[in-house]
Length: 153
Image (cartoon, rainbow, N blue to C red; front, side):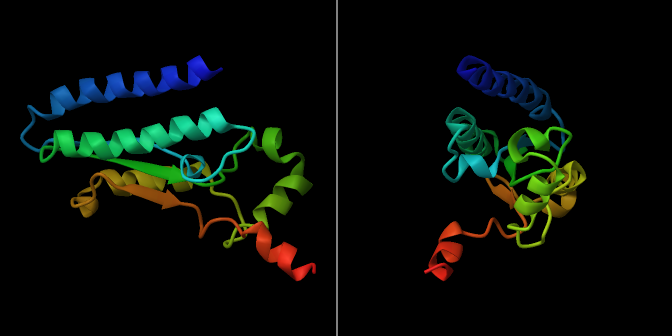
């Protein structure tokens, strides 16, 4: 599993290198958007390798942004919890998904379309000064469990 996760990072790096080679020759350069994760920024129990890999993706984006500027902008979009067809694997049935969603400030997990919209913005001319950054797409984060623990005493 670890080899697959880190292999995906190298695949992403090789794809970015190939894209950069083309973009550097273009008059308008280009934009490369990596998909990070909130798991790369906070503890990720039960999926430590995934969290470590996403932390590497975020660092990779910031380093390549410096290397490939000014022609190519590079950044990451890091979603929090996203509701997909596989959400039940981590959160259980609809009741579990609803309970997890209730811990998110906007009351729901992101949809894949939310992530796509953030990527489209990041790659657009409206974000022309955005490079080396990591866009956190997490609806304000997750409610810290210590708040509930403190109220229980």
